[in-house]
Length: 175
Length: 292
Image (cartoon, rainbow over all chains, first blue to last red; front, side, top):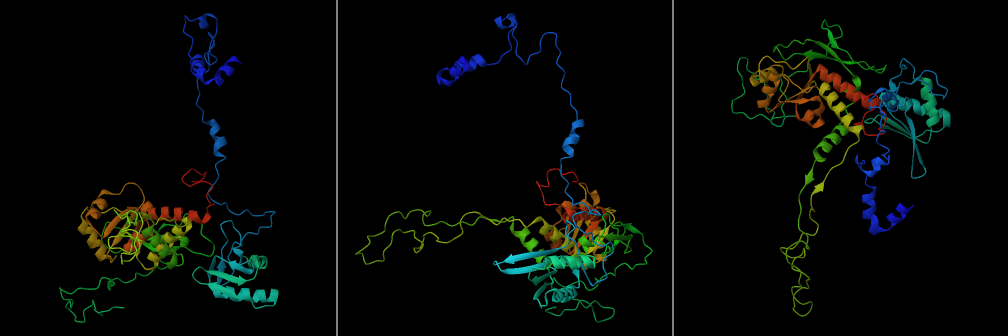
């Protein structure tokens, strides 16, 4: 308590610091004679254990390091995910799965009211896919929807939000 | 399309009709360089390397010849299978352009700097009084209107043109470049880079005989290269050797032919295909992940 009072006074800070400076007691000093020792110093007769290096506990660190690659899709899952069919369907086009093994159909909204559905990762005859998509959506909605084919990026855009229908349709095809 | 319509091949039987002082345009493709046919499915040659990673079910690997640098004969040693997702990617010229322009510009720091009216020496005092002198009104002799005055909208100080394209775009650029080289028959696979002599003449003759083109880029994996090829390529300006980590789109476009070893092909496939199946980084990929 008296030490804490001294610390608040800046003038006596120097004196307190020198008083608290940790030094092992010299053998002939009054501290050693009184039987005082630093907590960190071992008692006479007591042997402290030496430092031991062990790498056996590293396995607890290793199991926390995340993987970098996406794992293969599991077989049967309760989430409703359907794996692609092992043999590719016999169509002039092919739609690959995304890196998370999902169907690459996405929706986009611009200007608040412009709804677009995008089918990415198409390979092969993209115009045949466009024809099939148009026919399918005509059955679903009854309307001829405008579509845009980009042959460079191999994507297909359809006006409107039809991601659920298109995903189901592509799943049924076996992509 | 040739502007001058100069023919390299002579119409006379035994004579070479090309006069010695003729300057040929540099973009003339060597007419004796014909596309070598793709390996037929029933060759007797062994497949020296097949793809390590599993292929998608609807794609089949691309097959090419494997040659050797040791003897200058034209016979291939065998075949190799190349992954279609690295060597048979659709030719995205826009991505190739993006990556090439990025490589050119991201290192650029332009040091052009001009002095503004405040930086030009002098010009603190009003040259003459505002009214009555008959001359136009001016506030300083270093305004941009004056001769010797500062530049009003000139380049200001070192400007950096640094920007980074997304990692996947850069990877795609490499894949497109490799696929284009293979499709145009400018990619050659070699079993190893051992050559009998460190003589650069041997290499130039080999390249000429095999019709590999004007300039050749040799790529190998590993920190050490055979001494002979290092000495041979040291003197030559158009034949360059780089490690696989240094492969880039600009070098591939600059050199006409690209020579890869089988080890390099394995390395490139491993590294480039990883980007198709990786997660997005939680922390930079330089730090350890469990499977890197």
